[in-house]
Amino acid sequence: MNRLVRVVCVPLLLLVASCQGSGDLPLDQVDAEAVVAEPTYDQVHAIVQRACDSCHAGRAEPALESCLDIVEQRNSILDTAEANTMPPGALPRLTSEEKLAIRRWIDAGAPAPCN
Amino acid sequence: MQLTRSLTWCGVLLAAVVALATPASGTPEYAARAGRTCDNCHVSPNRWENPALASRKCTLSCQGCHVDPAGGGMRTVSGRFYGRATLPSIATSPRPTADWDRNIRGRRDRATSYNDNIPYGPSTMADSRAYRDSISDRWAWGTPPGETRYGPFQGRYGDLRADPVLRFGGDFRMGALLSQSALVFPMQVDIGTMLHPVHHVTVLANVGARGQSSGYSDTFDDSHTPYFREAFALLHEFPFQAYAKAGRFVPSYGLRLDDHTSRIRREFELDGSLPDARVTGVEVGAAPNYPFIQASYFKLASKYVEPDPWNIFDHDAGWGAAVNAGIRELGWSIAGSAMARRRPLDEGGDADTYGVYGVLNPWFYSRNSPITLQAELDWGTYQRRSGREAKHLVWYGELDYLLANGVNLLFAYDWADPDRDVVDDQSGRYQLGMQVTPYPGVTFDGRLRALQVGTSTGNGVDFFFQIHFWF
Image 1 (cartoon, chains in turn red, yellow):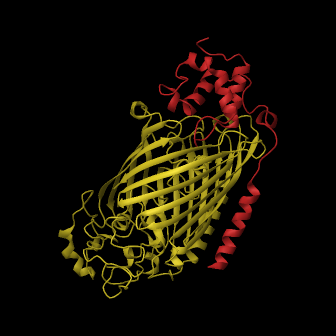
Image 2 (cartoon, each protein chain N blue to C red):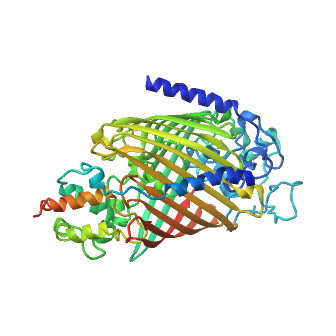
């Protein structure tokens, strides 16, 4: 039993210990083309729908339900996403790719059917 | 050429697995937790019998309890009987944790309080005929015609039908999430139908409604919500638990956890709650007691477009293959998985994934240690839309402690780094939970979860509660 624990658990723990940490560059420097230069509103809307609508479509402020809502709140969306403070609790945060898509959409002037 | 080589390797591995078949020396002791199912096969139920080696299931193999050999969903009669008679639950389980000698007259120990209301079945095959009239199974009908392996054993599983032609099953879950606000939502509704017209042949269709955390209206208004989670034909009940299945399924890979949000499932398109995780193909496998192997070849849908909910052949964006093999002892298991996915870049690109995982049940060795440990480590590569290859690494570990019959304490940690070259994109999640099963078919599951992200801000805590009904 003790031998089994040593043989199985110790290598696994060492593996896990060696897994910690990550690279040292942001996604746009690792892969400049990971996200298109000018993401469409639909791409951003899909991200907001998945990550924010559980609460911000009619329940919590600010509302992120309509196109106008998303355009008006774009900087707030990006700030909270990049600070990893939303979605709340232990819900998974936005991925590097999703954050980059929102940032590039805003940098491109936040093109949307409602503005 | 590549396919031929893969099939050759699968054949060699399969032959090796069968050659390694050995009787389970752990019997007649129960394996810990899910492994305590010896009485499903060895007991008649009031007499100990050893089936022939080719018929034994002395393993934690999923198909010991589930219709789908890959695990999860509708249960076999053996799994249902386990749920009634052995699964640790507060109210009805007549077999507390100290029951190491089964509830058989002449084998009882002094430490266990026994329940004489357990149904006693036939001692011999000839006796079993008398039990046909005593079957009272609400969700199963008929017996396949002709010679079948389990049909003659009416009474072995109490009043459950031993080998039904038709069976319905269900799985319902309600969830509540408390963080800065409270959210109550339907998580999952599954209705499964199993048709078993003749020995060796089963067709399974499982229709699932995917719950949406945005609430009831979104769940039931979305026309894409219900879909075929599983729909396949299965050739099984062969020696050494060999099987082949064809249709829509989730490929066998790694630990199939009861937590679809786990990163070891979600990172590799294996999230059981999503239609995107489904593939259409064939899978073959065998589990001659301790060793096991499962190999599949399948067609894939686009990574960016959900497959049709009902058309199981709407998977033409590429192909994939997976192998899952290892040893599942009664008290421990260790295994490895590998999976390749090939798609054009604009459909999701290529991905290669490898994993090792294991389970340890100290309870099997010491009745004072009702502990289960399980862990999985996965690594691999995938293509971004740009075509660049990214490397990811994922870990999951879980420790369970059975505090009392039907009360399980859980501590879990999962960690993922979606791109090893990108800074601060890794995150880990701790879970401290309690699962209470007052009655077989009902579980209350509460978990305090803490997310730890790679950046200086953004850590968070929530409480997740789930009520789970199944039959």
